[in-house]
Length: 238
Image (cartoon, rainbow, N blue to C red; front, side, top):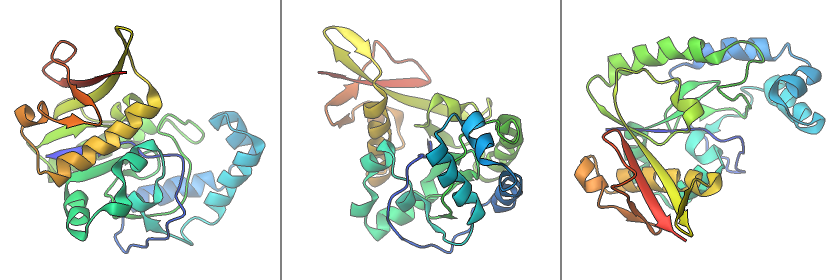
């Protein structure tokens, strides 16, 4: 079973190094070469970010490769707070490195212990090119070669999920809150639960769908009425 997560825009202060090289490192470097040519105004206009942040992004690419850290320790968004890697054992880290992939606009797909540099490039950003066709064939080919016939558990966002091939055996897990009888998707909580669920599945060696449906996590339980054959919804009344 392979679990898929989105990356994060925020980075932690962890300096956990790694010598593990991303599979698509050369492709990432080819994109970096183009990104280094971009101006501050390009980042502001194409990424819809402030001038201050654009300067920070420009610095990322100017210094790209000087410092590289373990991906799972470096990302610091809500999903990674939910994953709580700081409390993970060496055994769990090894299992995670075999079962989890992080989708990325820059790196395509990375394993948790791959060494990455700070960057900002969403899969939907068109600052240098449309990244969907750039990565789709490469990712499809990789999954066919290394993970043929495996079950994929998709805990990535919808924008990153679009890069995945259509012909893989994939189940998406999503999270909803029930407020006054109405179902709501609240981004911050959804992201946190994605990380928590990814860790739970790996830590407890759960790959059977029926066992997944029995999971109770942070008050969320399987919602039969909202789920379908390829979508497992976990809901929580608040």
